Length: 131
Ligand SMILES: [Zn+2]
Image 1 (cartoon, protein in one colour):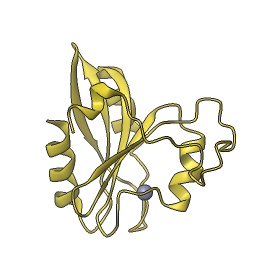
Image 2 (tube, rainbow, N blue to C red):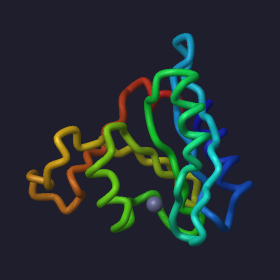
Image 3 (tube, rainbow, N blue to C red):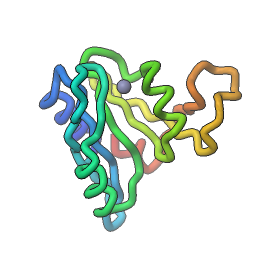
Image 4 (cartoon, helix red, strand yellow):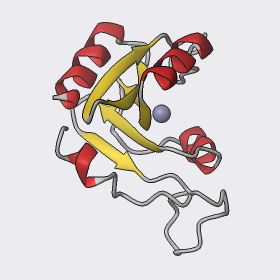
C-alpha cells in the first residue's frame, strides 16, 4: 500500500518533512520517495533530479509531503503552492492520517467560499483506495 510507504518515509525523515510522488507504472500505483533539499524544517523542496526521474518512470498521480509535527491540513505556504500545481497533493500528518487535495487546474483563486485555496478533498478514488 502506498499509504504505508508514505508513513514509513515520514518516520524515516522526521523531524524534517519528507516528500515524494505517487506514479502509475503498468497500472500499479507506486510511491517514489524524493530527497527534500530545503534548509527549513517546516517546508519541502523536491530534489529536481529525483522528481524528473520519477516523472520519467511513470504517470504522475500525486505529490506527497509530510507534516511530522502537525496535522495533514494544508499550511499557508502549501495553499499557495497548490494553486500553481497541476497534480493532486497528499499530506501525511504526524498521526498517520493522509489527506488528499485536488489541484486547482486553472490556477484561479478559490471560488467556493471555503478558505482552502481551491483545494477539494477528493483525491482520485484510485489513489484513495491505496492509502
Ligand atoms: Zn506542508
